[in-house]
Length: 313
Image 1 (spheres, rainbow, N blue to C red):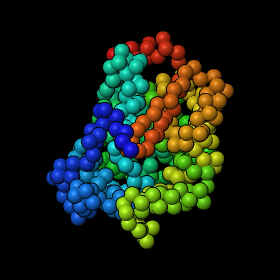
Image 2: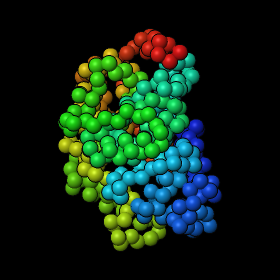
Image 3: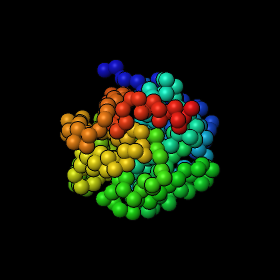
Image 4: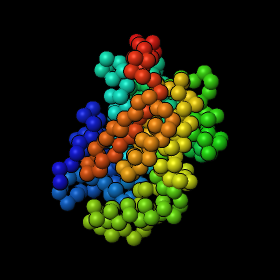
């Protein structure tokens, strides 16, 4: 099967250049191995290997000299996360005469940033956007704040104190955001999350042609808030759409990743219930996996173009 490519602007589109990564981050050396095809790779079933690869990618390509998270927290794949950023840029460019708006005048809200802070870090370095990031976990917020501070990045990181809320009590009366993004919790319970980890474990065994006996060292960690919430992904996104209606004048585009394609029909129904003016689904291809995000707005085309002219010109 021919693997689909990442976004054309994604700097990781041609895979990992380990010589370049090792030069930037020599700490990666002990984790680099030779694959069956005589190429360099890492053991993707090993959490420390994946973390060191992320550190090297962030340092080599995004000038993030300090990045670290506890072993129990979600360690995201950088290339796939950056793809979301590039497709958001494309969405904004449509309102701006097909020119991507860059610079700190572009305001982005990241819902559920996690301890890893991956979207604000890569989005700031790629397009110089100004990010506000939120999370319901105080530890994640503290770690994210430290990462931003140590890399001298001005990122507004906020704690969402009301775990049942998404935008409520987070977006302030004077806030204006050009776009929001979110990687929502996938699962509806801890049991469901554990089953998902078990499936990933089996898939990694097949992909890496090995048997992993120590599951505690696998690379798909994650705290409760990162992995599951009541009602799972679908209920989370429906809640987000519902709350977005209250802040429709303060944000041009709302967006959210959708991992399960069969959730789209119910999401589209919620858009109509909330009188969304326009919505779209954007597919993203990553290897043999296809992911997607939904985007919605309460502004018509003319008002969106006025927004872009007033704020980005």
